[in-house]
View 1 (spheres, rainbow, N blue to C red):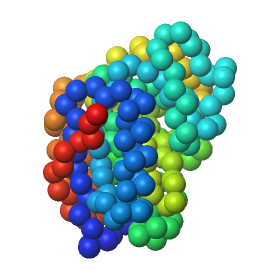
View 2: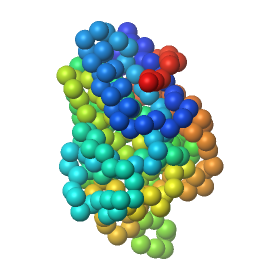
View 3: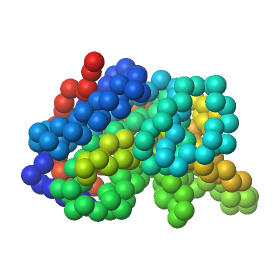
View 4: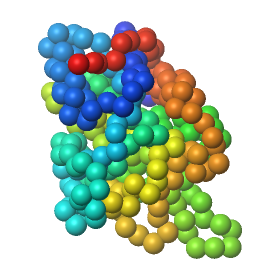
Length: 231
């Protein structure tokens, strides 16, 4: 979908929760190195301690419980998002200039990456016009609409190199989302879910394998195991 056969993408996994400020600094440093020094692109999988992040479109009234967890200005697109244990974060440092300079196509590829990953667990996920992220339709045949968000997307580009990325709910504490209006969406019948909540008791390691296979397929490139950023 976003092919560049000459590029091998580094694939790094942190096995302990990563401080948010450090993660942002590490992403920015890698993005500069990709642009200025020809460093390899990087997909960085991690978890964060429980926290909320505010995107550039965040509205203060959507922060319902400002004292519940630390709140950070993310600088990425989007509104308020929760990150915490049991959620797989994939930070994506990709040179979009080398892949066609098409931001919309890049975001569509990220969405398709999540959808294909979830399909590996027999979960049918979809996007919705006017709604950010990836959703699962849980509407009963004889009941009102119910659609739950299972993954969020928020990226930033600097000199055409992306950072930030996606978050996929594997087994987070879903009650932690109550402190915000997730991505500004507050409609009847819309909620938040996870793979475990849907009845799939998978681990982060299971999801990582599916993410890697789907990434290589969607982006038509290869990944190579790498050491994650560290202090």
